[in-house]
Amino acid sequence: MTTRRSAIAALLTLTTLAACGGPGSAAASGEQVKELRYQGWVGAVTPAELAESLGYLGDVKLKWIGNTISGPQDIQAATTGDTDFGGAFNGAIVKLKVSKAPITAVVSYYGSDKGNYSGFFVLENSPVKSARDLIGKKIGVNTLGAHSEAITKTYLTRAGLTPEEIKQVELIVVPPVNTEQSLRAGQIDVAALSGTLRDVAIEHGGIRPLYTDVDLLGDFNGGSYVLRDDFIKKNPDTVRRFTTAVAKAVDWSRDQPVETVRAKFEEIIAKRGRNEDTKQVKFWKSYGVVSPGGKIADTDFSVWIDWLNGTGELKKNDLKPADLYTNDYNDLAKGGAAG
Image (cartoon, rainbow, N blue to C red; front, side, top):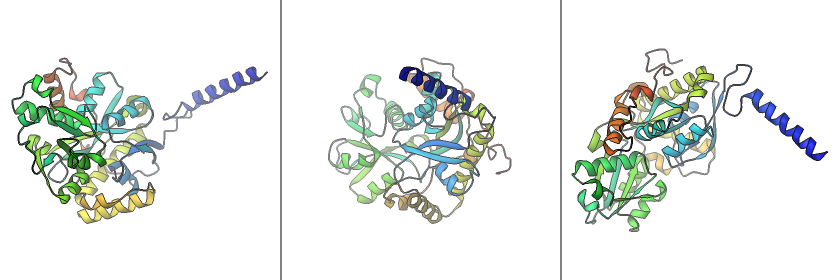
């Protein structure tokens, strides 16, 4: 009897899930999802979180399920349905798309400029002064296969190192909050530092930049938010609201005095109650998004498609930038009303 009851209960559960469309999908009634699951970053406020605080999301709500330190992990979570959106370096999005992941980028959410760049720092008295000095050395990065790795290999390649020499430069994964200390303790030779963690480390003194992404590439959009294609198809109005809200938040952060933005960040961090330190906020300068409204351009992806093809990682895949993104859900990118 117990077995029969269990079987019936299991059948009812599966029937209920099927009727609801499963987690993260639209209900059978045709109503669109109004709650978006996502991952955050410790001590930081993402453009999506800022958009919600500013009221730009309207009746769409965010549901925080935890934090991440890795863009590739974040977009993988969106691909598998553990979250509804994720953000990562555009080169990482290219790699995931090549593996046939059903995702599309909808808005730029971070980039590199003079206020928000990725720097690769050594101790002031370090003997490392050039790319060639990095052979046999360790570089601490937040994750592999993403922004820091791409910038580092671009730096090494431009400096004339051979593929075999580049393989001798070791990339070590270190949590961002521990990277500065790892450098000062001699556990790594170079620290990849960005955002407020970079500025905190600079204020502490005793370090110098060896190379930066802006020095190599100039100002550029670095990463995009992606959503699953099936989610976009089932929830077009929600996706439009989310995408346009993020675009508005990015523009708001650019247009406001930096003190106003920092105050808003402190308010958001205090309100969400995740037991975080807000001392990093005073160093925030920019999200680094270059384009108005976070509009995505072909060049945001083509540079990384070309680079990955050049390294052999894509095996001359015929992927095109248009296969990776759309601006159709970004009313600011289309010049429409902000809504």
